[in-house]
Amino acid sequence: MLALQVFRWLLLGVEILIALPILYLCVVSISAILASKNRSKEHTHSKPTPIKFAILIPAHDEELILGNLLESLSALAYPKDQYTVHVIADNCTDNTAKLARAVGWVNVHERFDDVKRSKGYALSWLIQKLEKNHLFYDAYVILDADSLVEPNFLQAMAAELAEGARVLQASNTVLNVTEAPSATLRWIAMTLINHVRPLGRNALGASSTLTGNGMCLSRSVLMQHPWQAYSIAEDYQYYLTLVQQGERVRYVPEAVVRSQMPTTFSQMRTQDIRWEIATLEQGTGQIALGLLRAGLRFRDMVRIEAIAELLTPPLSLLVCISFLTLIGSFITWSPREVILSLVLILGLLLYVGTAFYFLRPPLSVYKVLLSAPGFMLWKLWVFLVLRRSKKHTSVWEQTTRTA
Image (cartoon, rainbow, N blue to C red):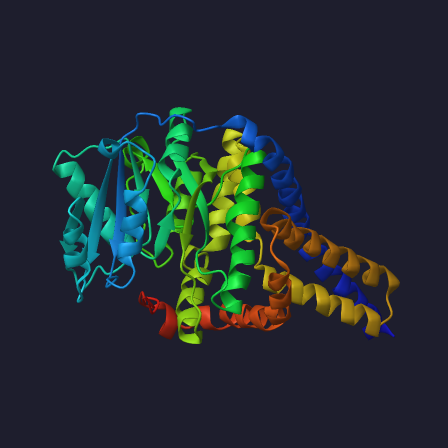
């Protein structure tokens, strides 16, 4: 009897523990829906703002896909003399540099370094090189080579910069949505992470995260906070650095960049591990305490809210724990815990349903949801096991490309 009572209290403790991040996700979701209703009234982006951009593209053996991005950049609805494209052919062994030069209007920078091998090092190297050569720009846009941008991309960014924003993040979504069930599920997941959450957080007066693709950094920010993010998850590392220093990342949903998602198991393994180790290398607890101290000291809710985002577990983990507590509550027949577990699951359904509210997907997408349990189990395995293995996280590994 005592063991049963202890187990019930344990269930209640776990439910209360995960209720906090689920409540946070619900608040952010509702804020995103409310913000979307007013967003179209705030900006029309009818005329380009005279801001000079440098578009930086780190590329390691990307000859199969780089041409698509360059073609989309040539179609930007922005004055051609107001943006310059720089491709970093980083430790390339293929024809990436040759392909970029053949376009005629792209600046190509070849870099070879067997020790400092990552996107973060390549970006730092190029930014310093441009500054030394007195090539100054108002802002720097960073794009992945496997992407396409919408024609109004720079217009949307320029409008936000003109209003005083210093760090921007574009809407980073999926290009090959229908190519495989995994790509479709990532479309839904990325909508939650890269649209719902940043839109809701900005509406609350907080900061968006940086997702690596579609970042826009003003020169003033880079001069004040030089790029020194060299980990595998360099985007998240730099985001944390900025927030700790009191900066706020502004999410720009009108600036859309679409990237190719993995469709094979080997591609998924490489990319998912790289994504999931974002907070592991940073010392999450130490960063959270630092944000709390600074937030209280400066009375800054941006820093304090960033703690909630930092400590929110992956959706797969929240779903798994919620269903396990529900099963445990039924086994011990604890009506209070059963009701609380059902409330938690409803909260997660509200959060996930927000993605469908924004996407309005066709019926075929709903059929793909049958693959969701397997997809979530794989994400759990990556989060709980693979990301902690030095075999998979000691060096940067490129995701295999398909043309």
